[in-house]
Length: 225
Picture (cartoon, rainbow, N blue to C red):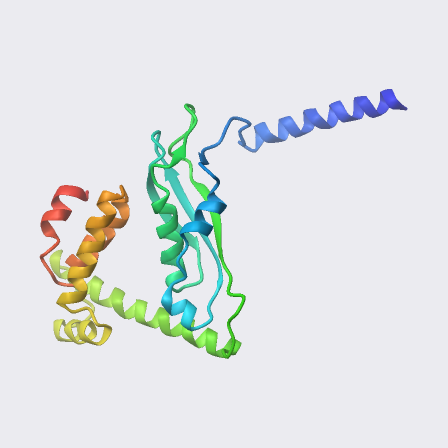
């Protein structure tokens, strides 16, 4: 009986190994963050204001790629909550850039997928309906922002604008994207450059550009492809 059990165990081990090979999974070492990603997130997470004030929590899944030096050179939200929680999850992963230990045989084209959890344990006074309405309001503002960004992108490329310039200016004023805001967004991008978050920096610079401002053009020419 003991011999039979040993043979079955060896057989199962072989099946597991074959499954790993067929499924493309690797037994080699994986990239690691000093101290662990969970600890890094816990120590650096800042709960975003909009979601905090509206009792919004949930999971955000981030996909990212590391180069051979452990730099996060690309990252995106795979699934999110639809509020500023998504941006905070991205910020955390991009903040980890350069701190990863990467094996010599790491394939830098492969996505690493990680969930980041946001949980409020002491949030009262908001019903599920109110939380849902707050998420929808945030997404509606995001849609208006994208309408303005699309207007200036299309204008640059001589494509149909979608909305009029007067409407774009009206939306900018309603959303609070004035010169002071764009200057702060530019400064945020410069800080990200120093942190080696080149993707995040270029997103900020291009946001400024496609809000109808030229103050980021030189930085885009130098740092963004």
